[in-house]
Length: 330
Image (cartoon, rainbow, N blue to C red; front, side):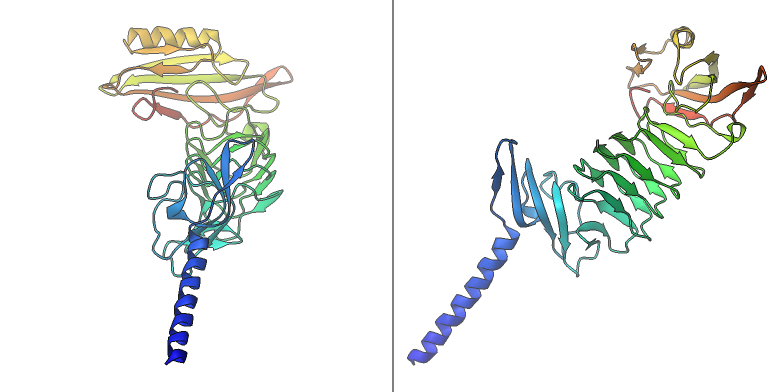
């Protein structure tokens, strides 16, 4: 009888030990990082149990979690530094070497912020999702391999990034690449750049002769520099969508890759005549104040240089269309 009771007690103790072990993985204790004002957890932590203002070395996603990654179910921001661990039975996510992907491997959802030196996106990945590569502290080089799409704010706040290879990218969404350490990007293929797609201080290098280049426009007042260009011709169309036939056109020539004072004065005159609610700051940014009206500003440019005292041109860029419904400033 005593042996049976002892066996039952031992079995109960083993079960409790397993439960405690599991909980220690899923609900991890906090380890404060002194002097940094944030907490850091080194143990594996379930994504549903994370807290704000905390860094997590490892985050666990169980088989039932199919929700957003940047914020959990409680709208707490996810900050993963080293690796994700995903249940093999999860239908939406999987992890490879600690990086979080969609189950089919076509989307990269999250690159932990302390991946070192360089990172090559695996073949088969077609898109970098919104906020996927954020605030990486050590990476200096990124190869996007077969990636075709860079999402909204996909690669941001990454000051050590110096090299980006994006040979197969077809589209970069708004603010897709910003606040990085990049100085130049080489583009060999045709790419659709949405408004404010790549930070405006980046120089885009085209693998084409000058006359074959098709410039890219950053916003309604600024565009990316063309190497060897001596100036740019600019054409801007302004219209009110409630009266689309009443459109105005502004043309001009500038030396730099943004509006100069002359074009700003022309823009101001036209916008005032159309009675738009706006202001232009000292950097040429146009701010609109009416939430009930929809205005459209379309800008295109072409660069020029001189060859034997004769002007030669690049192609015209596509129009960059700015819609006040999408944003209050261009």
